Length: 119
Image (cartoon, rainbow, N blue to C red):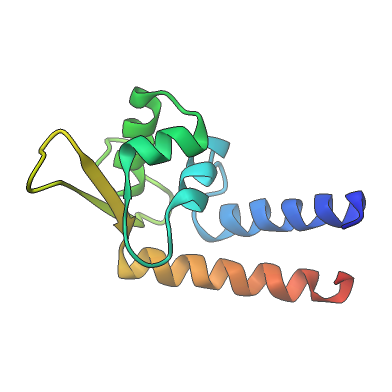
């Protein structure tokens, strides 16, 4: 892939996420959203590994994405939900809510439309 094409695709992706979710969406939240699978769940530890965020930064970001933080996303979204492992309560898992999955699918579609001509 040409470097300018890659940069344009990345720019379109970040802008679509910010337009759809929050205009001030930080990169840490973008990284977390991109690490959560469309189907199934992912452990907090795996998110920390993939994003290289600290435990506290990851927890704060996940709380914000779940709508549990004092700070709110501009749309009041609850994009993810998380829960403790019933067997090992030290483990926590996150997954997209239905609203979160719909939001991400809208973003994928917008980016695909914007970048189709350059493929």
